[in-house]
Image 1 (cartoon, rainbow over the protein chains, first blue to last red):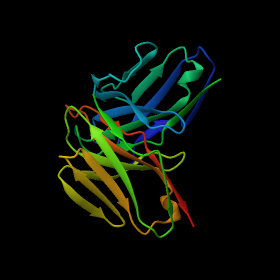
Image 2: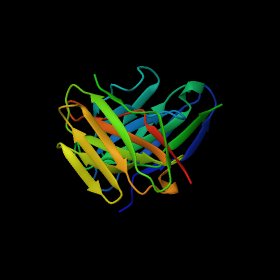
Image 3: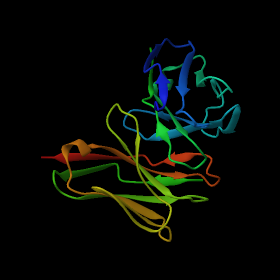
Image 4: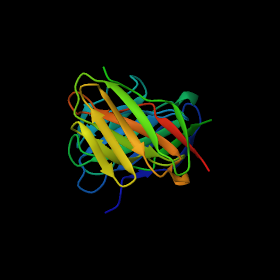
Length: 113
Length: 110
């Protein structure tokens, strides 16, 4: 059973471009969480999704950021018109049920140049 | 709102014991988790306390006191590979998300 898969592992974008981060949860997991981590800082909650539904997006910036978890395929975190401040590691986690232990992917390290 | 407070850095000696504390303020509380993260790596789950008391898993133990809104992670027989950041975490009032503390960076000296 493969773990949580995130790709790409590293992503470089120029200011103004779009970044698309993908997360495939563990098999059988229908709950997905996205977190952002700046260097030397903790994990900041962004959004919690179940299949086809956004359950909690209280940590998402109001503009430029969106997330989806379609019925088929991976969860996508999309950042439009990236700025230097978006540079961070973005982690995805999944769980089988709400409140269960969350398993993390290896993260996508986004660098905006 | 929710917040979890933990020390930013702790230093210990190889072979010793270290305790990392976490105090929390949450509008609802289900339990306290601990995660380990090595530099450049993913957070990995260590332990979970839903009830008061001590949970032991090998060299690691975790404690929770709900009445004090306090918990700690205890690491025994420290090894150099234990050098990492440790995060306490708690679910939201509706268990809709996991909120993390800012992390404690554990440095171990020979």
